[in-house]
Image (cartoon, rainbow, N blue to C red):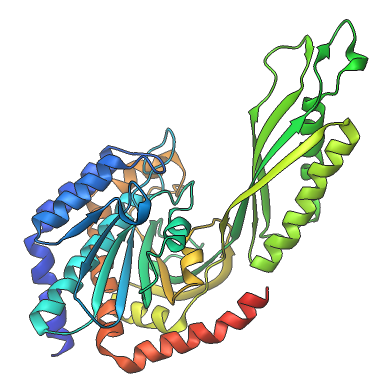
Length: 406
């Protein structure tokens, strides 16, 4: 079959569900739900897929708001990740409704191609909750959701100048590795006016740790980040506080970098405990790795999107200082995590309140559907073209030793 036939088949398949797909996107966007609380989005997507004749596993792999839908019974498996969690107070300001839309469109299109042209392989649409806060993909990795996946594909919306260069998207973006710390200090209460010398001040420990981290920030690499929040602090002034709790995120472009920076941050926390006389408890969680780029996947995606009139940068070499749990997936299988542009006003960017409205427009939806078509064509390549798949896998395998050594 020719490329023209394949594209025409994709267009036909998605035209048939255009109205329902737009309604589904709007339902997700207009009912934002936080990490692991995406019950309505989960149900709406599953209901839609079942209405299209697919069997869906709800609450998949022990994650309440995950789901799995598979087309095909044997052969290589292409995975599409659907995100749908939102942010506190500002809703879908990262546009995860668009990620869900593009991945659902890609799954529907590739499944249609599989049936129409009688090709083998398996196509997995995986609901991946809690990207913003909770590492849904990391949990799904641990419970075997990607065990049979050969290639993982997805795309994230953003402004036209997301990387500082006007473009319709970027096929390959580098993102920081990230780790979380939960830090608790334990001291002794005393009356702040009557006998403060008998107290051990947990707030002093926390403030000292914060100041130490602020000092450390002068001496970290340009793409590294350390930021924190005070979660439990004293509510009155006349008692020497015996307890404080804080939450921190540490980011660095590589796993080696994150390990080294984490050690420096821990020393800040430990030094504050020593200075104040408090005892300390640190819990490290939520590792998001950096993203392993794959030239073969990036190149083919760029080519397919050009066919839809989109100018895509193949790879952007500067690290975006955000992080995503798709990095963990990229260490398990060859992965594409691309970006695509939606109409936005000047200065609007993911995680800014103004981006919420942008992510809900008809124009943004149309861009997500076109991206879904590009992802479907890339999935098609991976299912029918042994040479391209072998190139993608070989390149990924060649990157793994240096990554593991880090």
